[in-house]
Figure: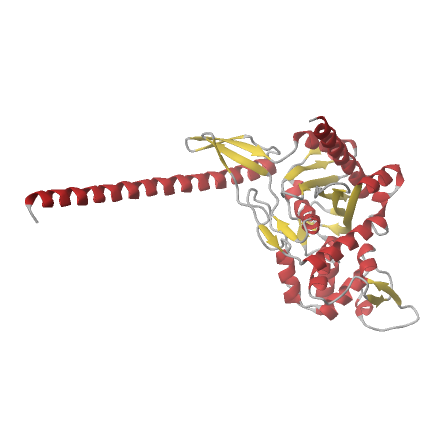
Length: 411
């Protein structure tokens, strides 16, 4: 190798070394930028969660180090305003409402109110301090249907009232007082005894625990908000398994946002879409997004059966008031609706809880519609039922759907 060749080789090697150094520095800078973006998203999530709970507001500007962050929410401002006006007009001791778009998982409206002073309480829909009551029958039904343990038409027997759950009722004893009912009608009428017996005979604590996890219990529910985890404990006896499977207990806890998600899973064909409240975070003209979760948690056949059972609850079951009256008939004509109700005394704030989770989708078109959860808490007296408020909320939604159709025709 002559002198010229050595010089060329040295220059080439030096260029490679410098190029590698520049590439390494560029990679380090990129990694640092990505890390800063991730930290910024985590910071925004924490600040938004804190201010919603402690200051009752959704901040639109957040300062992180030397960055000015703009927060955009998924909430439909017009829908939210009408929702809050409705809650102020018909207040219970406490009411919380969450409305989710089934297609995307985005929260379109969310609010809470206290009758004392008619004060808005944005923390209430996100707190997981509320016994789930019979809403948990959705999870139990998913467990039994997906494991082929029961068909909707399967008939089981019970003694006594379906709203109670005594140990004698769980015995498989047939007498002159024994009545028979199909599983789908037991769901629509919220029969605790049938669900308790079915859990003992057809499933196990471990399997129930796994299905509860699939449906959002004991796990992170949202990526962009620090919502308290819903709680489902492992049953330690047959009777406790019956209590938990039927919702006849105060140990299983959930939030109204989670309650809306349960209906959304059914409306989405068995897919779990994590609820989303933050649309994006803007940093230096760049929009950052939180990762979503989409998981198949229920097979197609089972979700179709559960869908029909929830529709039966609206037409002939515990939520039938939704389809009654002139407004109810109008809603039924234009919307496909499925629901589950629940009631129990306990939780924080303490009181008698009146639950209703429902999905509604237009009969025309491919719109998957919305899922809504309402939780009322009352003490000494009742004020407004969840079915009454649900009809009012669906009326607002239907007006929005009609407005969108009118705009589409004009364009």
